[in-house]
Image 1 (spheres, one colour):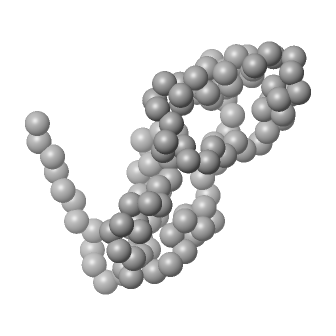
Image 2: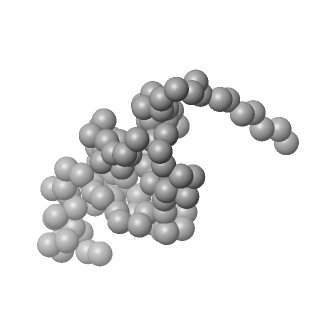
Length: 111
């Protein structure tokens, strides 16, 4: 994409960028998007410093049903991609808080 193209201008002006089926992207595809945005925004921050906001209403939209009534296969199809581990932890805690009746279980892994 040329930095002077209309598409580049749209990306620079975008407040939020949503990628449908992001889980289908390879890590190289995601890196390519990050590199493109860094170049277009002339900013070395991840995704060119574009604000990646994940709000409570996104969780409501994705997990609008009662989580306790959903089957594992339904839950596995509803994923939120977060830019940092800190944001992932915040989202996980928000989703866990929506679970009823059962306290969360912590499972540890080992190598």
